[in-house]
Figure (cartoon, rainbow, N blue to C red):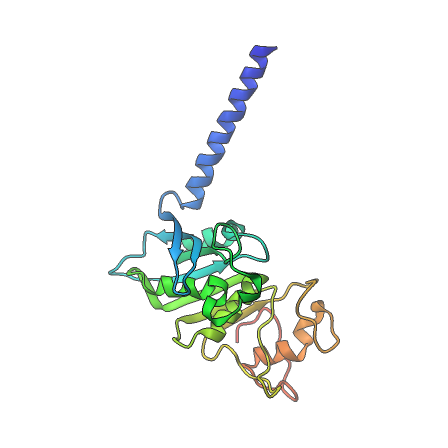
Length: 243
């Protein structure tokens, strides 16, 4: 019986080893991507926990585009691994962060997460960090995140007076559609932007008395697809189309 138990323990350990090696091989694209586990001292004066993925095509002589990736509420940097691994495989330098108060990043009061001085709860700090790396094309930095991470992306765009962000993808969170005068406007300016609105989202995409599954028919979505114009009287635009 004891000999049998030892056999199965050895098999289990062998499977763990094979799984670990296999995961490493696929996540690094067979060694083509370098992984760096970082603690960054940021511009806002806090410690930011992050993973930096550097594909082999990113060099000081041939700079690569870059993306900051962020997680949702009370998660951490690893929650976006499905996305950041693929971005790196496609040649992007990727910084996957744990926002302040999450993962191993510095804990700050939650009511200060979105203060300008905390740089979109660390996400805009990540953008600034990437912009200084010698192998990153500072004119091609994008941001993306899910839920609370998408909120961080939105806040980073609103804070981006330096023009460091060239593209934004918000997943399961809204853009800002109207200005202080309640008039439709384009918060993204000349940046490339996209929104993934989950059909049955429990928090966002609920305006005009319509449910999230009808997001594409809402005035906000139509204004977004018309680059901030008032959609009244304009031809309806559709989802899954690049404008």
